[in-house]
Amino acid sequence: MTVEDIFIFPIGSYEYHGVEMPADTDSVIAQHIAKDFAKNFQVKFSGRVTLLPVLNFGLSLEHKGFPQTVYVSHQAFYGFIWELLDSMAKDNAILFIVNGHGGNIHALSSLEADFNYVHKTCKLIASLIYAHTIKDLCIDLFGEFDVHAGSVEASLMAFYQNQPKREYTISGLTPKEFSGSLRFFRTIELYPQGVIKKLPTVIADPVKGKILHDAILNQLHADLTILLSKLNNFS
Image 1: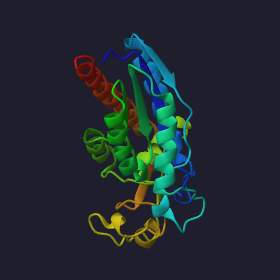
Image 2: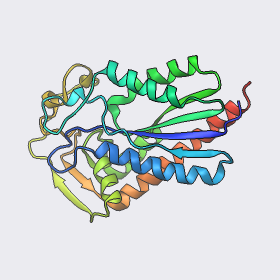
Image 3: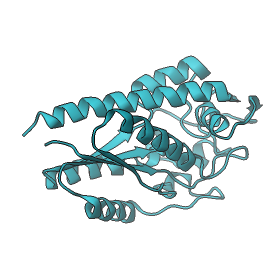
């Protein structure tokens, strides 16, 4: 398989991110990462790189009960994304999803496998923008990897929106959780403030946001480069 086309598809969500952050945070992050990734990857790729519009809605049932939260079912999401991707499928192409919302991960992972088993010369890659190396960097930068509406997303948004550095405290943050608790309970039952983190202070630092953004781009670039090499050598 010789890859000639790469389609970059950002996917986010529309869900409550506490009182300080917008509901489309995940979509904004996915869109900015996808845009810069497409531009940077095209420089070293001899084929075509196409940036698709961001999908602003996803699987956010875990945030049910909060305002500003819109979502679809797993079945609807899976079917819709499948049909979109299938309509774009062509020989020697890669469909590369940049996903900004954790709630979409399991559905996209299933889609990736199912799509690739069916399509021989067009492959789907459902990327993880928060890979293990990125999570480790978040711990170095913020003291934790807070998965929703915390310092990670706040700093990325501060960078994208040219905001000055600021910090704020999530009052009454006493999460009721255990490892894997979000598999059994909604966010509002565990984190009634709508912010999933352990440390009470949110750091919105555009400098750290840029460091994180660049690290994500570098990780995605390395991942895709390695995969392209493997696919190009596979017949």
